Length: 427
Image (tube, rainbow, N blue to C red):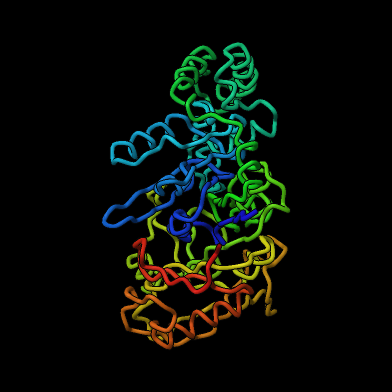
């Protein structure tokens, strides 16, 4: 049962799309198991760049079946727009499967997300405003709308009424907004039913049967480990579980079927939105990382906050995910630095701390303890093997591997599909 989980080992934006696409030619199914269109994956194929927000990256690999699992929240208008854009570029999207149990992001979820974040002011979380959090809240509160509800108008109407009973009270009395009409929402959602129908399936059955037939299934997380609702830097997190355990609940497969867990690590660190970030840079180095690395959010369009590599976070990701391998991306971005700082521990109230603090307060006060590693000036984008890398680049990779607690099995040396050094096969 060759089932692999591929996930971000930092705060997201590590290059999961490239890693998924690299494996796509050998994989039968690629499954998104959590998140929504608040995630963005950039995949470069030849001279073509594709920005995917909701669709699994495997949709760009012929012969691979892309799956949107039950743990994903789906904005139908965004999904259909994304499919249309790929079709116009000649990409075959007909194999896509969508779980009938996936929850729908409704227009009122988007409205609630935006007004709530605005109301929080300085205390805002930094959400994308796309309705992700409120949709997951509805799911937990059992007033959510699922994809399968689009095919029973009576059930759909009842569920929308139940959801809006409370939300309209909040919108009108707390936020001074207009009430949202049930009929309008129902009409809009029903308008998506026929367009989505060819893709809707019992994906739990499909995936388990595929694994029983020794098909290769890749489970793709939408965000990074430190954005996990349970294991991330709460409350500055997403509303679902991008960690490895989320693959089981978000796709409907048992943990005994997972054979490998691959963490994607950027050779430095970035994050988008608010929240603590011990190695964040506010100087010329930070600006250089942002410029050279093209650090702008695929979905949000926001500049990413940039900092040096944080080995404390990497070790934490190894532990909570049970990582078997790392895929190190964007090593080429570090070319040109005489010395490269790496955070090996934190200083908190005068104490040296080797592991991620359990306390939110401690993490907010954590100061990085750096170890300086020698840099390199040689262009590494044409490197095809580990031995092709400059000695200092090799030493940097080996140091990160030792500090992080799992082998680095692949290295990204450029944005292109072929600009990857594969040290150990993931399959």
